[in-house]
Amino acid sequence: MNSSHSPSDRPIKALFFDVFGTLVDWRTGVAREAAAILHPQGFGLDWAAFADAWRAEYQPGMEEVRSGRIPFCKLDLLHRRNLERFLPRFGVTNLSEATLHDLTLAWHRLDAWPDVPAALARLKRQFTIAPVSNGNISLMVDLARRNGLSWDAILGAEVARDFKPKPGVYLSACAALDLEPAQRMMVAAHSSDLAAAAACGLRTAHIARPDEHGPGTGERAPSVPVDYAAKDLADLAERLGV
Amino acid sequence: MNSSHSPSDRPIKALFFDVFGTLVDWRTGVAREAAAILHPQGFGLDWAAFADAWRAEYQPGMEEVRSGRIPFCKLDLLHRRNLERFLPRFGVTNLSEATLHDLTLAWHRLDAWPDVPAALARLKRQFTIAPVSNGNISLMVDLARRNGLSWDAILGAEVARDFKPKPGVYLSACAALDLEPAQRMMVAAHSSDLAAAAACGLRTAHIARPDEHGPGTGERAPSVPVDYAAKDLADLAERLGV
Image 1: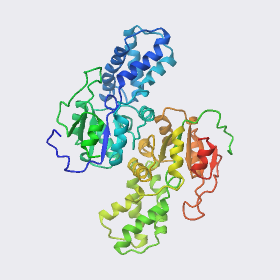
Image 2 (image 1 turned 90 degrees about the vertical axis):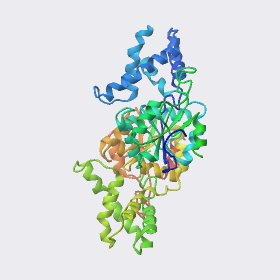
Image 3 (image 1 turned 135 degrees about the vertical axis):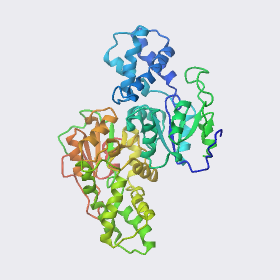
């Protein structure tokens, strides 16, 4: 614990999870899937750079929705548009519709960090657990089935029809479960996500994912006040007494 | 199989479930909960009749939303309003706010029919499974946790912001999972629900719940064409080859 909140004020009833980076390793997975799809078509690229380039379009793509310039759409659609935006920079052109579609679904085939499946099952015994991700529902379903995660509900962007860190996404998740924000805790590897959740009244837990963008590149510790700062999900479960 | 569809046309990928009556025994549960709450306060009522009276307000309450007379609200809110509407007929007045709230949550404490938990776990191995119920998300979460049901996602009224049998509820559930209606199957104990789902292009499976409204009162067989008519959920799993 490294904050002014006292976790014993009110019991936490539900945990909300960020997914990309916090629960799943998007960079390794996207690189692997892109190689598996494009290498047989004759492309030899820096696949990690490919994943990074795709992820770099992530926030600007969502910002168009958050700002109201375009209506809400599923993250899958933004991923597809972002893909077509950066592909030319890698000299990749003339992909078939089927290949573009398959590439977009790479984000549905990511692996969880090794600590996640067992720790999440453990946390579910005591807390209602739900992803509050910018990913769409089908994306969350596919990641959960692939990695053996068992959610109580899938909340987040598609239910709120907006993207984090807009307050409406956190508040809609709280409203769906009928409890006050103080009885929820947002769990994420990104301080910006936690700061936005805290501003909505949620409790917060930071998970260190030092290798998110490649070895030694992720957040080792939160840069904002949080209720818990854990080294992984198992550590968080331990500290929550589960 | 008793319909003109051939289930082998296209593979079914997901099963959508009606919940009240199809998966859980609302009548026994509501009667039990009402007795547990009101008997200690001195009320001796026909508890099954109490449950029936509450359920009788169900469709008229939702119709106000479906018709656009009032905006969408969670089923919990309609249950509360409906409760206050019929209570005087049972001579029950002056209940405290806490009692009214607790009574409303009786619908969160219903038991599944005995065949449901194991059959649903079996069906999940092969299909994506989600409730497409008029119940709100927190209600679905509480029923699932109580009965050990493990959904892939919670879809239905609160996500669609309207109530069945409006087409938008079925279609929004299909859209959330990215597949065409023909790759979905609605599973319900009520022919009206299945007819509405079929009109949206979904496949349909009827589950016999002959005791839904009391012994011998439920639908033993569908009154509309369906793809499958099963005697319970285990029978459906068997016939789907799971």
